[in-house]
Length: 176
Image (tube, helix red, strand yellow):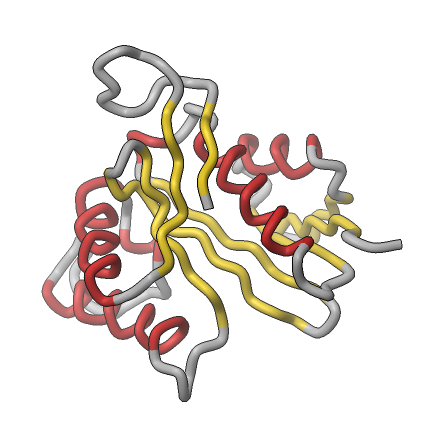
């Protein structure tokens, strides 16, 4: 899946629009995804907590790989489809869709350098288009109350947002 973000790509030499591609996760893409996570995200932003000292320890890197292999790559345990988010051919994050009953749940994380540049908006548009090709009735996502960018993006797409504690749930109907 491909799209173009209107903003400037991180490191774009011309300052023009960024070419955004969702690359299906496989082992080579997973290695690039780990590199992007280590370079531009806190482990707690991109994976479940792992005990031990903070930062990208060897154990945390191994857990990151195992997490994605289990959720996306191993046919016996896969529960979601995951893509590496490429901006002008450089990995900057991950996007996913996971089926939940009559809904498809979207997830997205971006490296710090890719945030605030329209990448999330374009990736969400691509995920929404993919969700519409399924028989799902709803597109759902969740974020935190302090993630103003995600909340604004989801509301702008027409999602109904509800806040409960430290979670904001978004629901967008795909079918009447």
